[in-house]
Image (tube, rainbow, N blue to C red; front, side):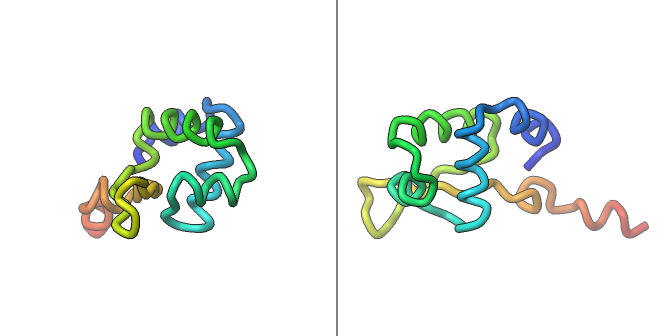
Length: 90
């Protein structure tokens, strides 16, 4: 997650922060899985995921077990900055 999305996460509503934490602890989940784990309504989870996607903190992918659903996961910092370790090795 980039610095700007880390700052954006602090400005999100509590429901979006909860969805982020659920994904952080459980790994990739479908929207239904997030609803079950967070005990939030489906509408609230949809809104939270939209907000998290808006700051590029969450990535949406196809759920191959059921193509009607999407799989959501946290965007990893290593994927954004692959050379981060090489910069500090000098």
